[in-house]
Image (cartoon, rainbow, N blue to C red; front, side, top):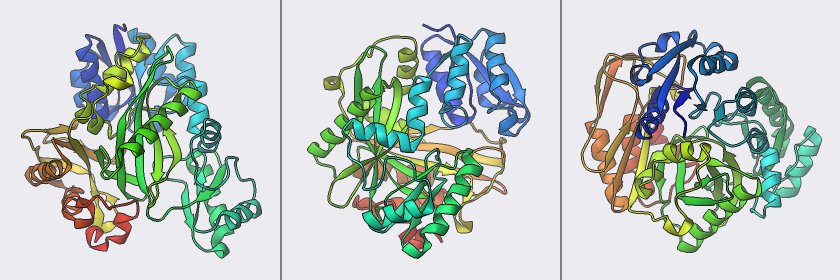
Length: 451
């Protein structure tokens, strides 16, 4: 087992990882940017290292500085959390070159799955269903237009290296395809430094279903059930729940088995998420893999009783999985709301500022993951997440009721600060959502919710 782990992240996920380290008796090294010198992680850590100024490219994305901090402090492993360097195969390779364990999949596996086009090819070979489209990158606008004509509109053009909802363009009119193709490639090159794109059928009323997997270095793999992440804005998730409402036992078994089959086929190790789209006829299609812990992992923890970050660390230390598939039992239902410092009335524009009031909810089955306290500054330099509120109950109806109560208790106030709390309350009270009939276009069609 590791004696010391460096956490190459900030905010609530860094605090979450530090707590898992503490539960295993592992020392914690925090790296931080200059404005994060007094952060919750730094206060929790045994050691801390300043790795640069506020901009991420000079601090949390600065690989040499992160590695040097690990070497200086004697950290044997690095946990990347989510975002930043968590899905960077070059960073994982540099860790290995310096004798440091990267807590995640191998660099070659991450590279193959991090590119959405190659991931589609790998999963197609493993027998997972795909939406109509191509598994190879599309080289020209004419080639893409021909593919779109053959599979039928609407289609979606996606950046192969994309993530975070960026590099995605839906095309409904053939006359707009070439312009959309060029624009998407330009965005992909600007944001991801890789202009490769591919084309597939677009589903207007799909549900976004993902499966949590755990795999060790000894060939063992399990899935921990599925999550519904269909409530989104600009392809970014706002509300997640486990299990997904309305799936049949057969659908749950099939989608979970498919995720494990795909993970085993590519030699995946650690915690990962296989994401699927479910159409209105109940058919699911593979979409992508997230090679890291997910923001929404707490809902899976609440219904399984497992500490997923602890499992990540044990797997990285070479331990075999402590559970088999038949040991996995789902208990009740859980829902998570991401409370961001964003203004829904202004197109979800960031609304950071100084927190004057930060009252968090409590009660049976309620969990809050955050790194903030009253008096803290919500920085404009980083992700706008303020807190994740998670509610568990014996069934979905009660879990939603607990979440509404929890959000009503929550107070986040400050100069310039606006949050998505009220939008979440509207979503939770919407009859379509309560009936489990929402889909990825739910917020787009519910103008009253985002106005």
